[in-house]
Length: 98
Image (cartoon, rainbow, N blue to C red; front, top):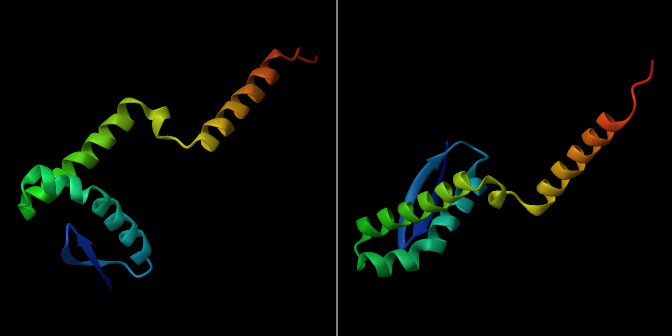
């Protein structure tokens, strides 16, 4: 089992993960850290409340994506979906052969 040290809001946290998942865990830690400064200002510097505010910010983003799913998809994915739908529509419009 691997271990990764994540630094969030200036505090190190040792987290265990499966072997090979270290880079994914570091990316998640970086996501938390991007919200840390805002959360620290909002929490008055309390480390426990800072983590709570980070969690609330991420929950808000998740809620927004669930409410507006297309907004969370990359443009390339939306383009591929549109191309497939156009192909289906074109196939449906073709006259059936006997």
